[in-house]
Image (cartoon, rainbow, N blue to C red; front, side, top):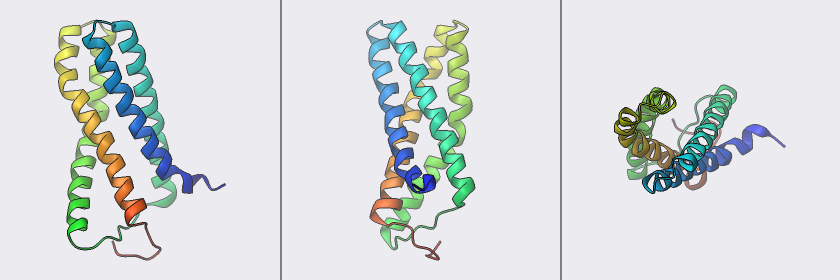
Length: 147
């Protein structure tokens, strides 16, 4: 089995899993279950780290993948892609600072930052899945296709 070929759907699964774990963790923290919240967030962070390692490996092996869609879908795809990439670059430090505040026990500060971190994390994860569905399912890449 070719590992590179299975990575795009695996990346989408990891994105859905991380976003789901983070949302369920939010549910539990709102109900005062801080222990389960912390466990779920550590799991979400682990899944996201696995995602990032797999993503970097995939693009190291494959490089850029051309998008085959034309017309309005192309504009939509690249609009989503640009917002996704820009926010994904912000997410790593944002998540790490949010985590550091929780580990240090500065929960007021953690909470204030987490109010931004969670929705952005979910947005980046969901748009990652949208990008996968458009670029690999609706308009699968073709060798030598348009950029």
